Image (cartoon, rainbow over all chains, first blue to last red; front, top):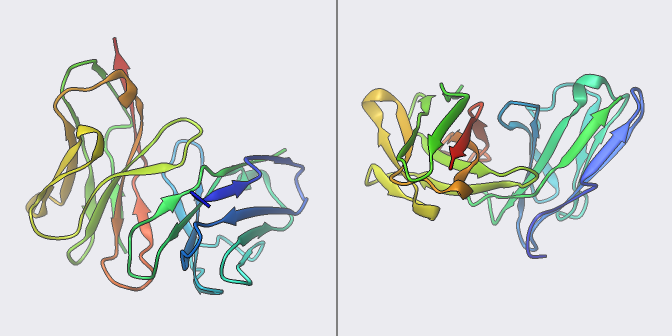
Length: 114
Length: 115
């Protein structure tokens, strides 16, 4: 596609529920990143994929968070047993290759846990 | 580990006035430095970046930034602000290697423009 697409744009869920957030990167981009932006803060790195594999997941806050990219294109960020502190905007970005800072960011998914 | 500080949380300037947004970074080697802009409900848009070479870099929308190694700074400037520049601005640093190219962002500066 023309840009990085994230769905849904907004998600409201109850505490304790499971959610999935989807990212559709620019076609041909091999690197994909997830960031989390809490209210009033800058984005914070969560996880990075090069192709299908998670090359660096050091930013995932705990084991309730997991992400996959099974075919090297679309990625899904999964959050189990959501907590109110998980409320944030989750941003996805892709770039043409490793070693390239040519990020294109999506518009994000605003997650609200009530 | 690298870090970025944006000392000003909010800045208000009059339309047509000059602008400088401050950014200080901490990183042990030569950093890769970036400025992004985020409008409400929008993704982050890259304004400019510094990798090496000339320390004064030009970006889109009339913005420029200057890398000062001695001050660990990468301040963003614009000579004349337009009302459409009102947004949130983020400075970021990259590790400067091929290990994934993750970015560390500052907390952001919200720019308001008075008519």
